[in-house]
Image 1 (cartoon, rainbow, N blue to C red):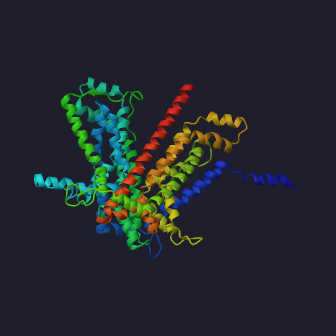
Image 2: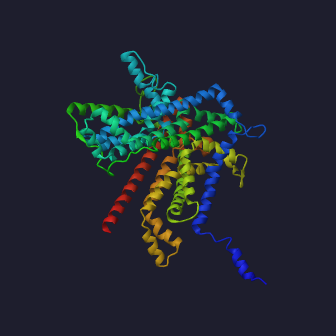
Image 3: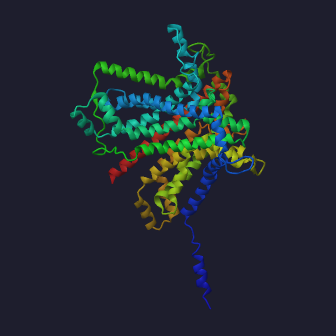
Length: 576
């Protein structure tokens, strides 16, 4: 007679007990599948679905490319993205080269001012730039008065290109400056010894060696511009893909196949641009002789060269800071129409937003704060599972979380509407697709990659020996994580929280699709509503100032936390 106890024991091993890390990984994977992978897959699936028969079809794409408006929107989106990369390069390249190549006072301040545009969401400054550079804006009024001509800065697609280029060029500036600093000085000296100087050396030696940083920034600019929804909408440029996706779903209906075809194209181009930059870099050697070779050799400028350099820098900074200047004038101005400056100044607009629009601010604090909290919890857990454990499939958690970077906000919003439409929540909360809580989930998914990178960087700085010492003294794995690992990761966790909060507070692309009632609207949606009418532009600009302050404070605090953590790590290393 067989030993039933041994049989049971052998049968039980077929279902081994899962570790806590494995259970956490499974729960996180389920969350990401439910709120990222499946909604996007649903959008892609419907794009290939015949609405009448439910069969697989390519007819939707044929209808898309046979419609003049959609073909025009496709070409316009590609054109605007490509031209934004070109214009952003023309802005970033002189700043990066001058500040890394020459010796003169103010280099750090110039770099800092060059990054400021990132703290303003592009749709916030779009209307302000129209008042400065539009057909009847300040600049064109002065040009027409003194020289008798106007420049179409903001006409149609030109306006979108100008706004997006000014906002996103810091991506190229940051990455290109870092690459220029890392070029081995001996490369430049060797080129000079062989007779290469000036523009020729920059074109043949310097810029090719800095290509990795440039391409990283250029790819980000292309993706961000291609996917952006708020700027074209506020500039009333609807013949682009992202606005068309929004208008088809909100106007025609959730079952309109064209909205899903456009969403598929948006995702495909986001992935394609990342793949293309990787393909371009593959097989090319950009390595220098030694790591950190001192960067380009700096030289002093002649007086005439210094004046020329400062002239270029002042012109560029005046342009890139114009959205902030215009927003301030609009927020404090009384009436600003057909005149270079407002007729007068007032603080009434700020009183209006604090008395009539405080709900937007409160909603934003709740939504962005909750999303940031979710992000750091998930980010800390994913970082620990990926770096510290051997759980099967742990790398896929990282890939799934990071995949949110390639998903446009409007596509995620459409995916939520499609997937959760008709699902009734208990306790009278209504449909899941229009429940305010789904906005928090969307913001958390969109900003998770930022928090994850911060948490991973923080965990990599925590020595594994500290955990091993705690466990050797009898501490459990959970206790070690709670009492040793997480406290040592505090700086990175706080940096991730602040970054997620600040960027989620001004998210428009996803939230504009999911706001069911005006009382549930966040700050970005409130700015969009105000900017729809001339009478609301003043309060809208005041809300925009508030949004810029939130992002600026978040960016500043995040950097301070990171710097303090680095200083602490450096001191700890020196003591050891």
